[in-house]
Image (cartoon, rainbow, N blue to C red):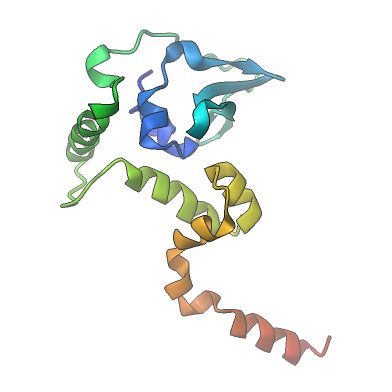
Length: 162
């Protein structure tokens, strides 16, 4: 498994976290498959790995252990460019055409999708490892969506008479 497989977008990793991860960082903790990620300040934190169907630690579900291809697994600080090229290559192979594709788009999608799914701001902040909730709020493109405006919640509350 390389850090550029589709499921890695579900971890919300920063580019340097993805580039600094390898197969040896996968493990188990309290019955969960985790990736030990070295974040800002060099702190290591386990991130539960998931599949689209749910936790990947389901009984009977085994992930193959493969060596990462070094060409697909950038390691140095300058490998942001290699990661960008790899993401563009994967997007092109999937038929996705975007003029300014970059790895941070995966992290942005991770945060905004959780916000769209009505995950609490605090839980999204923790998942994104943001020290300040204002950082998380900057990702919330939905603020431009008037369908979710708090005025509608207030109006519904007032009409209900409670």
